[in-house]
Image 1: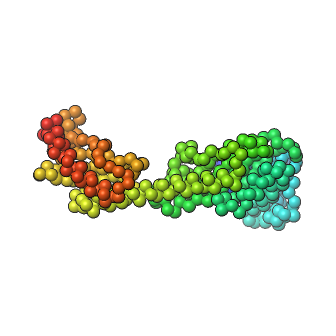
Image 2: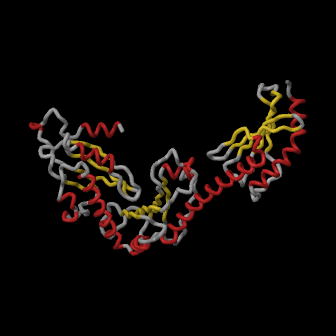
Image 3: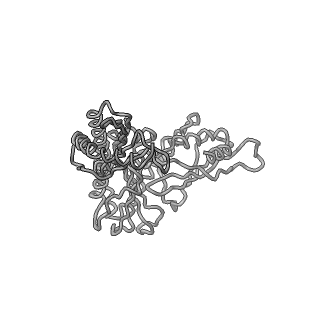
Length: 383
């Protein structure tokens, strides 16, 4: 934020609003990435320099298909109401959009602070068309791109061949694919602190025109990452030798959907488990986690011996069994002076049982365990 403020201070006051809007609203492309501004300079002659900032040209960095485009935007601080010129750096002069298709540039509105944003959107539309034309000379790449159009598992796609001479392939070709993802079934506590966008994009890097080696990588927005886990921990399917995006993209989309279904199922099973204990031990419930349903505490009594049972559900419940911690209400540990506890991690359990069955089996286990727990707590501690 401080770097953006420094950039804006260098700009001519009448040019600054256009750039402010670019930094605020200029999220473009499949990844909806932020635009970056740097290298602010002035084209005004030295003799006409004024005390006010007169920066009127700068470089703009635009995320596109896993790469970053670098363009130069040139205003005239002596006539700041005029539309800007553009230099498309790194394109060897090959990207030459038709000015007639850039309506927001030909009909530049100096009173609209979003005018530069609109022009960039027009240019990006033309740049995408330019990249599509570049891959027409490569049958494999053309097949990959055309096969993704209208694919249900693909919301949008960008392809970038970068800076290369016609008919050559000097560096990898990137396909950036936006995958449909719906987090609405996800428990609210997992996403409430990340109100951003539900975004998952797949970057497929083709290292040659024949697709003999393709490297896939998954990128998630903070909201999706918080709900599903770090993208580095999610092991997406390997791109098969001889495979194609038409078959591979649905596999990745199915993989993400299974992750969502798994999280929802885990949550529902935890809620069912806690609800069963509340139903069976309602009057004994001390407290429970009503948001994520990962903890439950009960105050129980056996032959006038009172104790607290803490139940903690692991992240992989019901595959992994809950941990039972018996805590005495009377006896303190000799070592630390805290209430005497006994942790039970092994008892009759099956992940296939219903929550009601688990609560029933837990009751039987408690009845079997508490006499020994009482005996040990009395003999191993002091009042």
